[in-house]
Amino acid sequence: MLPRGWMVQLRNDERAYGWISIGLHWLSFLMAVGLFAVGLYMVGLTYYDPLYHQLPEWHKLAGAVLALLTLLRLGWVLLNRPPPLLADSPWQRLMARGVHGVLYLLLLALPITGYLITTAEGDALAAFNLTLLPAITTFDPHTVDWAGRLHLWSGWALILVAAVHGLAALKHHFLDRDTTLIRMLKSS
Image (cartoon, rainbow, N blue to C red; front, side):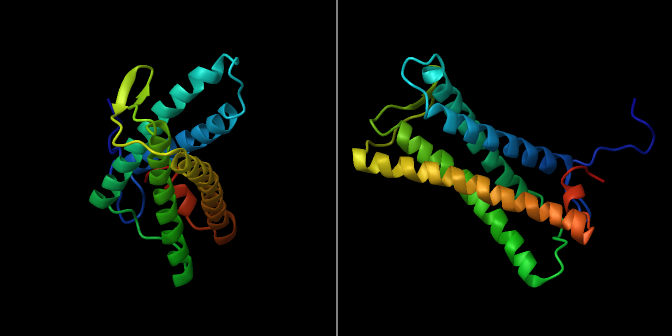
């Protein structure tokens, strides 16, 4: 039995993010960092390494899950507006909105480019013998190389922009002494 007056805030309100937004945010963060680390690690493996065949399977499956999670987050933002930004100046609000937009764009670009790489020869996107998405077309080697470079640089860009986002949250917490960071750590 829950204590009297205790209620879980699932939805955002004017003061704080709800637990659904908070959970989706941090799960996306952990998955994105994990996928980036695994992606960097697996491209350095040799054919005879035991993880050479396993890590790409996990990477594809987790990438598909993160793509679905990103679509869920975008839907949740449309249905449940976040609380107003606490930035003092118009340029800070513009930068915050821009950074959020770029993060979402990169979170969508990465699975799309990963899909193009994986399905380039006409094979479905599959992980552990489970078909996740059918192939829509085939691509020439030049296009696959382009998609691979875009995937790599989008991954680096996501990590860089996420780091800027995190530093901005720390700036709000320690320098501005507002509740920007706290609102994404706990619901009211």
